[in-house]
Image (cartoon, rainbow, N blue to C red):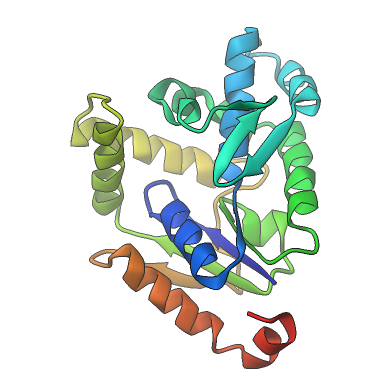
Length: 223
């Protein structure tokens, strides 16, 4: 069974997807980490961001592995490195690159094939897996999302203000919505869940409730 969770930055979809997968006994796939890893590789190799073809070429040579909730780039665990503000600022070069996206969608499909998976990102229910069994769009108000992002940065030891985070988030939302390939949009058949005022467990409880409203499918796929 395949469950997709899409939504904007700071909505809590990564945490929710991880906990939901654990609750169901499914594998979890963080596709955003893949774009970040490609961007990190481009940064380390000195790729000219004005030459998207060079980044696309590089992407096809990378060994990207997602295992045990960790992102590995050519065998190196880069799970923490890819979350740095420096990498966040350049990830758009990978995310907005049609050739990179096409390659990574194929990688994602291969990773999810014949498995029970909860996968999350920006275009999982619309582009990567349009035929997914269950689709969710997780979101929250801009202020709530900015507060969550600020808390993440503080835990990482990065200095920032709520105003700075909110401004960066708004710019990112605009880019994600305007992206020529894989834009951030809610799939027509996705269920939208607004997470303001909800704990992670409450959100997961709600998703499980919605999933279990599909008894025939769940019985067939042993959820």
